[in-house]
Length: 371
Ligand SMILES: [Zn+2]
Ligand SMILES: [Zn+2]
Image (cartoon, rainbow, N blue to C red; front, side, top):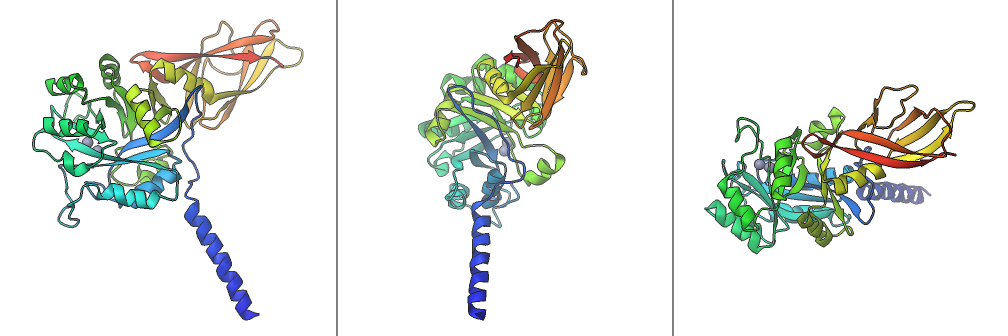
């Protein structure tokens, strides 16, 4: 009996241990809806571990991504900057990727091989992702780094182009080096959001040079300490892919189908930004308050972005200012004074922190059927 009891306890312990092993979801995962025709993949393609200047082992990066509900990550260790090399000799520059792949194999997280090409300005830093061998990217000349990345069919994006350590005015400077890389098809994207910084000048460059818009954490410490504990999510690139696969992610990045997202900020081309915001707000109920011409609309924000809106309709609101926020995951009841009873209205709002170009915010219209 005693034996059976301990056996049962052991089984129970085992079940609960297994449950822990297979459920890495955190309390507050990042969520964004799909848009018509595409699946929305949440990607953070700029991450460091101890294999360059980060402070954690690669396995922690995988676990953090699973807690955040991400679809894809890339460990982009600096090729040239190796401050832990005395403690962690690093003869194979694919090592962080292999450790991450091993950690993530039981999960659906896409782990993309990558490296950060690291130079002082005017070359700056760039990530090459979807590479086949990081060792083969080690070159003396920066131009040779980029040529080697192209040989591996890598998607390459310019990191923190506005970083004040390299550009003291805090604005990106498109150098002849980058112009040449773009001309040669060796540079395809640009970070407009890097860690907690957004540069609208980088967005202007993205649009002018037709570079894919990226948002990344560039995390070196812990996601929890830098973001979660402060009540925010890490920045991500939302990638609109045909399905959740490495090849679809890559195709979508080369095609420029992205929105960079960070807390209350969304940055992307209108053709992707507008449907994303439209899908993020669900109209739960629309009915007139009895014996009035005041239309009550219950709106639910199903995204992880705190959406700040401004009224763009000819009618005013009964109980809120023309500017109001619907927090991530929250609901908001809007009372619209339509002056007469309508069977349907176009709910037209400007998303004040959603930019398709510097100074250009998204204006979205939802068709609301009144009950
Ligand atoms: Zn960097
Ligand atoms: Zn970095």
